[in-house]
Length: 228
Image (cartoon, rainbow, N blue to C red; front, top):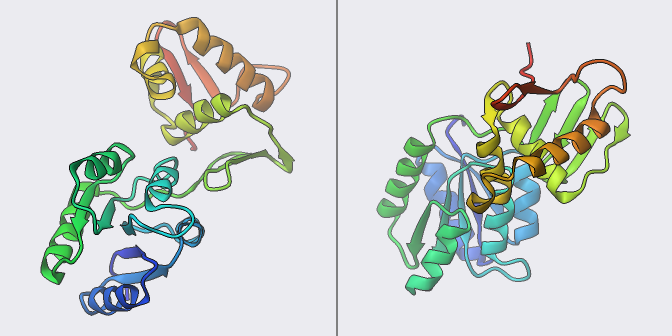
């Protein structure tokens, strides 16, 4: 079967079984997870094109899973919930969910929401691992390696590198980077960005010669090298 891959995350076996049958009958590839931890592992191994995510999971909540996925995946996330409160919907959407469906729901509505999510997404699901030359950033594991050596980054250095690699080949202005990493209130903190770029270069660039990975665009910002 070659249809879009859908990851179903729900702790109720009956719902998992029903969704597997319904979705497979309509041409989708279906992955099933009963916990948040299992969902993240499956998503890292075979990135889904749509995630159907129960909000109320044992242990790691659906909202926690949503937030973790959004650190490295752009796959549409549809929250499945028995709660119809506006605050719950807003929190889910603020954490990166794309849609919110109240249980019980009909098959027709679910399929329509999945089709709409796929149309909006447009592009294939990105890889959870970003690579350039010997530099490798494993987003699910938050692990950066350079050749055979693990590179130890601070949380902010990691986010700067992840954003640069995810946008490889694009010129990113100082303001764009500051807004993406630190938020709108830091758009003019250019010196802060320069300090973190310098720290990052010391850890991933050759000791001698021009930078290999993070190129400076004078007066504008930075560009992470695009693979040939």
